[in-house]
Length: 59
Image 1: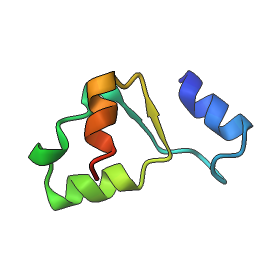
Image 2: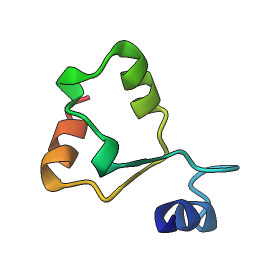
Image 3: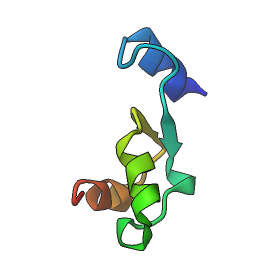
């Protein structure tokens, strides 16, 4: 995945970056506590729509 490679190349994380793609992202209001924790642990969001970006910044 390109996003993972770029994140590693620019040093966003040490090790293998955690990437979440927009197609697997549900609205924040529909997420369980466990899902929210996984979301907050992500290093990179890839192929995320404008609406999803707006939803993410409400966290």
